[in-house]
Image: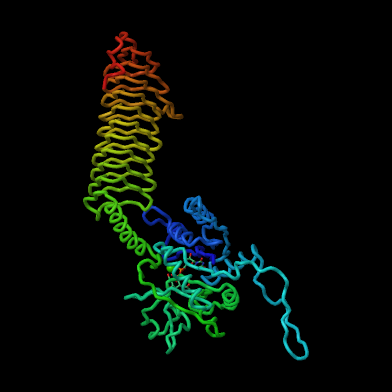
Length: 502
Ligand code: UD1
Ligand code: CA
């Protein structure tokens, strides 16, 4: 039987003290809620409902993006719905918003439209419509702030729910320190009676170490009924979803609880400290995983690898390397200490020396970069390119075997193959108002301190003298010198480095 999943993500996240919604704060480079969405999709729900409210648009974007990227070609597509919780009046209120949205989309659950008296007895009149499957399938409900939750755990809960024939099944965990969590109150027979939130708990209840994880499986109809009966009569003046348990048991429904064997995966993020703790844990796991996959990580304690990063075998990461966002490294690369690589793809056998920053770049095989290099924004380096000390490359393409080894700036440039960019060369790409392109064709040699005032083109096999200020296009195989640069002489076929020269 398929299930439906509701994720609550409309809260303010007051304890984060943030302008941003809590669930879009990032853990190892991914928004918290993205993790929860992916785990939820792992059980292949028929419908996925996200309850949004605070900064609804941001949260919605993240959820849509995650659904788009996590649902595989072969997977059954879930129906994605957003329920708007107008005001953050509590988790019970948010859950009700989800069920109301489902009701509006799918038709309400089959229920009596009226009760009439017939010969002194109450008789229910039923509406005659086909009830949507949503009201018969198990409804999983979880919070958007529990990023470590795994699909297996959700699946296990659903299985236990179907097997246990209860109106609700909750996941609980035993914590050394239960502070902040709702406590599970059981009766003498060990049956769950209710959940008491910390703010309402009496001292003996506070001592209970079994807590509510915030992951539930419900029969939707009794849930719908119970949610409508919630009252915000507590310290916070909120509708607590957790009160549903007491409501259900008080009218004779059974509520089951299963204890998690991995409480660490169910911890919620409420504060920035929680976030840092989870991040430290996740980071260790990510490093361990890549080491198992054949990556050498010399110091996992100082190596930061975001959740989506992919690394090839036999790549070596030195201490203090940060690999962020959608970064992919090929095989047998070596990344030296204090290097940061963001949203970039590197081929095989790429060596990046110390203190280099690479962002938004695509780098071929056998490339050498750094130390102290900066590549940013749409940089493409072909195979065997070498970028050296204090060289900045922005939005440029550099062809095979070309080199810029010292103190250069290449911006908005297209550089051909086997080009040698002399020390101190600068593409003067900005005239104060607009950016202009520079084209450097194959086999060009630029003398030290060449200024290329864009827009400008340096023809194939040409050369510039040291200190040349190039303000006009340079023809092929021509040496230009001076300020402004003028033609000194034509070069022999291979004087500027023929197509066979390295
Ligand atoms: C909640 C539970 C607590 C449980 C803990 C597990 C309640 C009342 N308490 O407490 O029993 O032990 O989680 O981590 O449910 N949200 C909304 N709308 C709202 C309020 C919250 O959508 O009006 C969402 C939030 O975005 C968040 C989730 O619900 O993702 C949980 O809210 P939060 O305030 O973090 O609940 P806790 O106090 O942690
Ligand atoms: Ca929480």
